Length: 301
Ligand code: PAF
Image 1 (cartoon, rainbow, N blue to C red):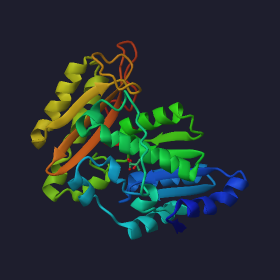
Image 2: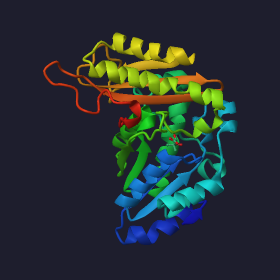
Image 3: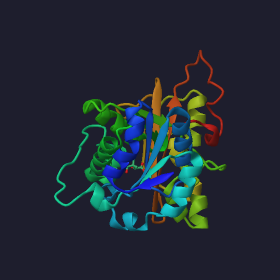
Image 4: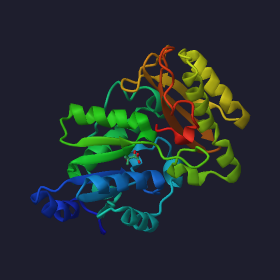
């Protein structure tokens, strides 16, 4: 695996593959790689001839300075893990390479950025994500780019910008990878102390309660959200937001009549975590499929 730090270097190293018409896959990351990232890299390895992993902690998407400063950084370890998972190229640019002096452009996606994470973190968060993802796509010019479904709203935003800007790239979203006890893998988990780590199980508990109630035939959003909130209570964790929304428009649902995205964010001490699950309404005449109602750790979200 080669590490490159400049856009020019990245283009040069990909040129022979592009010339030969080989498929290029991009896995954008902010580093602190965990099994969720590695599953994206392995998937890209199976589908593409060349796999680029980008490693860039993007300052413009952090709405809190403290969150940016404490974000885990471990390039040496990340490089080893990315290589083992099948990456050919690690693209690890500096902040100056991505945002050179005089940089003055932003990509802003309207509508789908205004709820959930957008409402909680402010408009600069998704402006930062949309801008850096657009830049990474323009830098690497991949055929396919891979993202984790844990950041469900981010996937919706990226699909929107790719469609709106006619970017010639396929976006693949892959299921959230979970710890054996159900906690979604996240780079921020490393910041939890042991007590906080056990309280963080409030998030999968909320999702599991919602999955169980839906599988039992409940379709009222209010009832599903109440059950999810109740399931968090024993952990002394309150959701920053907890919402049942349309998975594509992210508009709130009052009744689950098809698919619905249950999304939540919560602070455990100083660490802010997000999670989500895709719920499917169960009609009285069609029993719940096998996966509905199973433990969240086995659900594909
Ligand atoms: O999901 C992330 O890690 C980041 O938001 C991304 C897509 C790499 C952009 O900085």
